[in-house]
Amino acid sequence: LESSALSAQGEAVAAEIRDCLCRTKARKAVCCHFGTRSSGYLYPERDALIAQLRRAGFAVVSFSPTDLQDPGLVAVDVARITPADTIELLRMLKRDTQGLYVLSVNSLFWPISAGLDVPNLGLHIFHDASVHQYIYPNLFLVTQHIYPRVSPRRVFLAPDGSFAARRAGNRLGFTNFTAPF
Image (cartoon, rainbow, N blue to C red):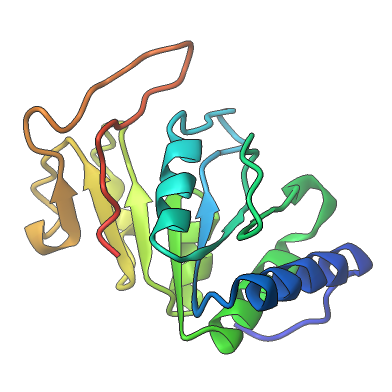
């Protein structure tokens, strides 16, 4: 992916992320994206996953709304930055940390992270028989579904008892999940 300049809003977010990295001395970061604009879906367990990542020592940049307040968390309002800003912020984090990871639902973050060669753990809780068409080399899935056209080496299958489907409107989420990075 070709580099581009950050917008003024993107520069402000970059400064906030750099401050967070300096303040927390975190060497690794996780960028999270838990929502899809097209369907309005927002992963319901996002705050629990963010809190778990913070306890593990990661700086967290959330590109989805969160109610958490933490010195090691930067919440980015994606409506205020451009898609090019998102790419450049991920590029900056990849360059400025000793490890960058993405944790996301199926969204624009899947191809962006693939283009930047950033490991991505995709939370894919809805059955989609065509998911094999957008499995990138950097992507692993957490799902409760067995997909015959996706290598089992690319899937973290939620075993019986570790996944609870909880519906609240269009929200469905994992519980008792430990991120494998």
